[in-house]
Image 1 (cartoon, helix red, strand yellow):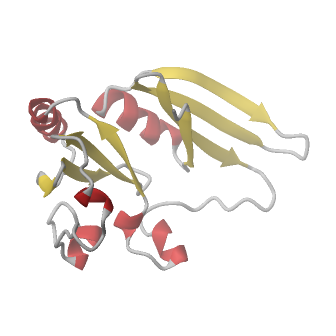
Image 2: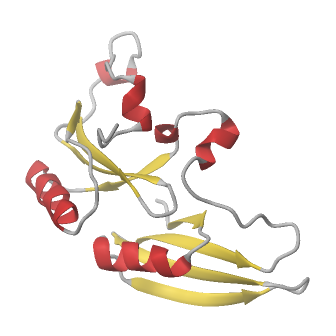
Amino acid sequence: MIDHISLATCDMEATRRFYEDKLGFSSVIHETIELAEGGLVDHQFFDCGAGCAIAFMHWRDVDGVPIKLGQGNHAAFGFPPGTFHFAFRCETYEALIYRRNELEAKGIAVGPVIDLNPYQSFFFDDPNGYRLEYTTRLSQPSAEDRDPEKRRIRLSLNDFYDPIGKQ
């Protein structure tokens, strides 16, 4: 079981507003790490359910630590942005649709629900440029789901770059 995932941010306030106000994840820990070499790390954890958290670190005034973040961070690795993402689980398809509608009503640009049998998912981006997914599993994976010759999903490369369809 994963306890938490930690990511970087250059704007903790925008990150906090997104995860608390838009996604409804409460802050469970917010601390300042004082580095012996100088500088600070603003470190905040948000509860994303089932005992799991997502944390963000904002490195401030630390020599040698880059401070630029945003859309296109995936480009440093040469992969499309959808390659690096993480997913939050909804227990049912109805909960997935409810969550999508809820986020859209809060002004978040979300993509359509995509059939990734046995999963149904939708994607969106946070203010740091991280790709996020909400997903639900409609059935348990089968033996065929473990065979890449039998399990084939057709997507466009554009689905990885623009899951919302804004281009």
